[in-house]
Each structure stands twice: as structure tokens, then as C-alpha cells.
Amino acid sequence: MLRLRALAGQLTSQIGRLASTAHLDYSRYPALQESDIEETLMRGSGPGGQAVNKTNNCVFLRHLPTGLTVKCHLHRLASKNRVEARKMLQDKLDVHLNGEQSIAAQLKVLDQRKSSERKRRQGKLQELKKNWQEREQQEHDK
Image 1: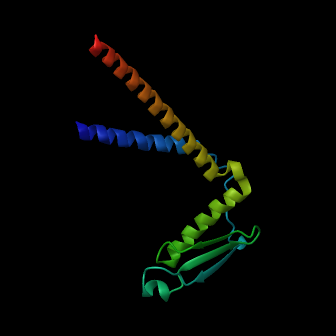
Image 2: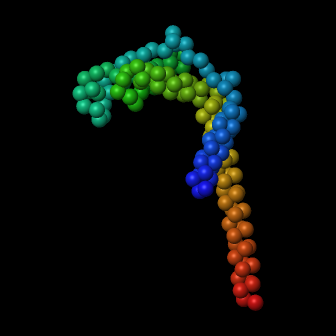
Image 3: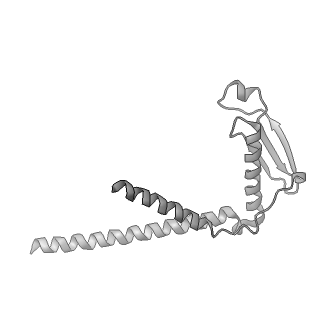
């Protein structure tokens, strides 16, 4: 029974997360043109040994019209880093061009709303608990 409740809670939170992201406005999200991107592969650094130190798998992208740059070395493979770097550049370009209407800003507003709602609910619960304890104390004193 307890496990079913936990699964139901997880499902509810996942549905809530999907519903909250469904309200994002992607109409202004910029599309990247390959002709606007200058790509350079370079050696990465950090843990990974020879696979990192002797291979050019770190991707550096520059968006020529705006001058925005991104460096990505999250994966060991250059192909994965190329895909990830393009996503990062697209997000950075969205913030640069759209500002308050960017996807990142919209997600931040949603998170703030969720946080304030959670705090409001916790405060309400604490108030109810405090009132209940006072009533119990009064009944006990009688």
C-alpha cells in the first residue's frame, strides 16, 4: 500500500512537471544556421587519461553574427560534444536575443512560482498544526 502511494506521488510529480513545461513559448526560440557557426576542435583537459590528453574532442563554437562563444567538453566523444555544444549555443543565443521571453527566463519564473506556492502551503500547514496543538493543550488543561 505504501509503495503504491509512493508510485502515485512520483507519477503526479512527473505529470505536473510535464504540464508546467507545456506552457513555455518556443515561438521565439532561435534556429542555428551552420553558416553562422565557426567550429574548432581542441584538446580537452581533466580526468580521462590518454583518451582526453591526446585527442581533439573538446568543441569550441563561435556564433559569428553575435560573437557568442561556447566551449564543451562534457563527453569523451567529439560527436557528442558537437551536439551538446550546439544546444548550449542555441540556449545562450536565446537568452541573448529574447531576454525576458527566453526559455531559461520562462523556466525560472515557473520555478519561482512553484517555490512560492510550496512555501505558502507549508506555512498554511504549520498554521493548522499550531492551531491544533493549541486546541489539544486547552482540552488537556481542562
